[in-house]
Image (cartoon, rainbow, N blue to C red; front, top):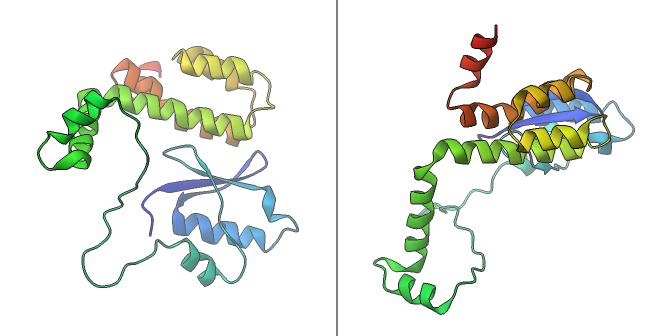
Length: 198
C-alpha cells in the first residue's frame, strides 16, 4: 500500500494518524458510528493535501479501493505523469539537442535543482503543507491570518504564540507539519531546536 502517512480529523479532534491502512480502518470504524461521515477531513501529512476516500461497503472493500492499481506481467509502470509544458523556441531547441531526449533532459534539470538546496526545498514544502492544512481546519480560528504570515515569514516564536489558543489537536498537528520549515531554515533539526529551548 501507499507509504505516505495520513491524519484524519473530526472537527477540531484528531481521529487517527498513521499509514494509509491504519487511517482507513479507524476512519471506517468511525463512519459506522456516525450519521454524517462527510464531517471527516483527511490530510496527507507530507503535502498537507486534503484527500477523500470512499468509505462505503466493508473494510476489505475500502482497503481494496484505496490500494494502488496493479499492472499485469511485464515492465511495471514508472509513475510517469504527462503534462503540458510551455517553453520559448530557444528552450525547445536546446532540449532537442540533449542526449536521451527531451523528457530525460527535463528530469535531469529538475533533479539537479532539487539537489542544490535540499534544506530550502524541504522548508518550502513544509510551509506549503502547513498552509494548506491551516486553511482547511484553522481558517476560522483566532489569529489565523497572523499565524499564516508568521509561517511564511519563518518567525517560529510568533507562529507558536499565535496558534497557542487553538484546539490542542489542531495546534499540535499544524506545528508538527510546519516544524521542518523552521528547522530547515535554521540549519538544524526540530529535535536540536527543542533540546536547546529546554
